[in-house]
Length: 300
Image (tube, rainbow, N blue to C red):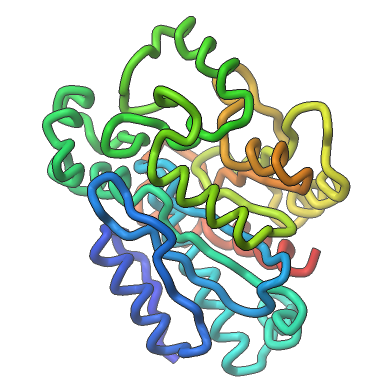
């Protein structure tokens, strides 16, 4: 069967077409929109299997890290293919696994940011003038949403501490990266993911980022049960390093908020090596270890 997800630039139009194609090819998939970006783009959710405590996987949190969108979609399609054919993938028969487990995927949390990184300031829609001013024309490296808020600094997990750190670093207003907004969950993209997470109550979450081939798994003093065991297993199958956040990377992230809110394991997976945005040609090499992590997450 021909693959729907092929290495192509994940513009909003291409991603939407891939999602609709997956939904047509595999009618057992639940496809919906959990919210909209500042520029009005849909934030899609794909789900499959038992809805009780699924794994929740998020890609496209940062605009220039758009390779993660393809990784999230490719993994979801491989699960669908395994279910449809009742065959094993990564040593797992997902047809059997998904009778008691579920998977929820948000392929692209930040569709405006990805569009800006790929197509320039016009990708910001009504915020194009702001993006032009803030980026100085260097939009390829844009990480934030359309109004210059870094979504991975906008979650309610140590946000006040992070806000002080941002000010000390001279980050006091919208920027291409690392500005956490006026208050936690100020952005519609962040709110959409928070509401979805509370609704589906995942047993653990994985946020895909790039780059560095690293795994972040701790937040605060209360390390959830299973976290270290899972992190070690992910490192073993992928070859990625286990690391801890420092400075401006210690609070405000999605996995930080999830660990604080649910007291369950949350992970940030940094795929690939190099400088963001990683080129499309890197996907073939960067994806396989991520697939191993995501596959293992389905059975742990």
